[in-house]
Length: 62
Image (cartoon, rainbow, N blue to C red; front, side, top):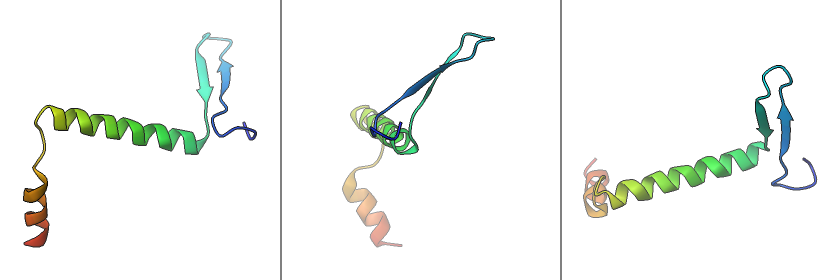
């Protein structure tokens, strides 16, 4: 896994035949960030959240 930042190691548990994929902590963090961005975009497209000017006013008035 040290050779490539996106190297993955697949391991199979012989007793259950469940496959596990080991990835680097950096790749895991990157995938979590991408998931959070996708969820944020989905919320925005669904009309959830607050408009930017409201958030700025809320922060400014603290």
